[in-house]
Length: 102
Image (cartoon, rainbow, N blue to C red; front, top):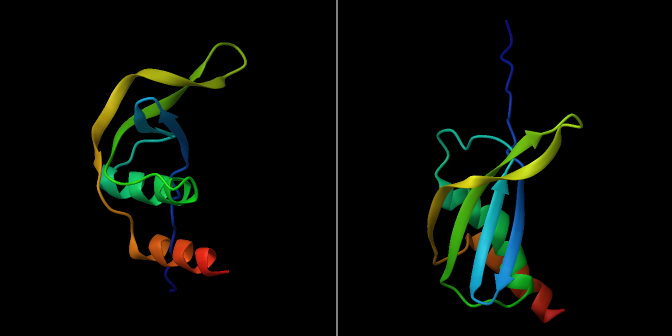
């Protein structure tokens, strides 16, 4: 019998606030066992590099919730996590350095 590998992708939306600088990440599902700082780094680092925002940057993680008859996604009021993003994954750093050279 063969094995079935299932990968669950967690969708994240990133909002960058400039005054004061803060990253807000909205998740459409519970992060489960994945560390929140890893989710924030994977989701936000490409945007931070593109906007040339220096690290460290404070972050807040919130959830989307379905609301009303139309079941639209709206941000939840409660905060899941807060922290300080102090470094980005090496793959993001390499992509941004390669783009800067071109």
